[in-house]
Length: 301
Image: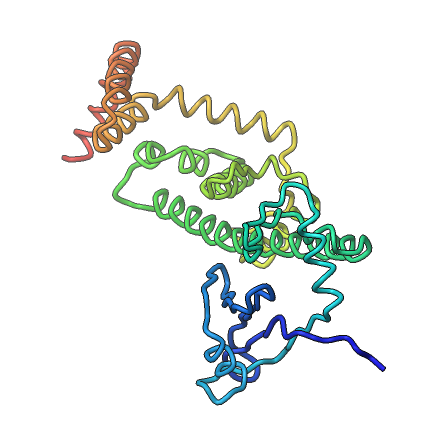
């Protein structure tokens, strides 16, 4: 005959209907029989009458779906373990115990710990994959917007050949011969960088992520798609050379934009540096500036 006495220790509550809803629990302190409501990160005291009202059903859409009982032996063993554990602060009336954070972990069997740890690794991997897929969808959309902007800038009839090239490094690449692939790679790389997570396309080494990026790009129409995500050494050198050429041809324009942006953002130190740089470059490239403003005058006419 089983002579153990059992105590109702916890009630798990479902608030909602079949297939959807919210879960929380009530837990009883067996030292003083008080109840607490554990609702996500919020823990509050609760009267027993309210606990039973929500558990029995008929109160809004709440009802108990699991009851947890503890036997006398389990309760006594746990309390004894708590009281005998080091660094436990027990009040004089023994009704309030300050329990070490890792205490309950010592009561869990090793096999269960290993199972939970393995399950958590799978769960965190799934979270990482979900985040990456979400970010990747945004990156691909941003890449398409950037590509369309470059196409629009180059095909805009109100700008001349030189005017379009002054717009950005991407438009410069678009108008350079045999640069279509490195242009797409550059636009995708800058779309990754915009996420603010220290990502760059060239730093991604995970084969699974590269496959996912490739699969996303393969679904795009022909103007946006490209196959190999890794630049060859020759392509890297080509990209560097084109950027150096762009910086050499249009340093004044770049400096002007930097100065204007610094003034608008009230970054006075950067603005002063930009003005000094403009003066230096202007003196160095005085002949180019004369040609450029002459061209602008002709366009206005």
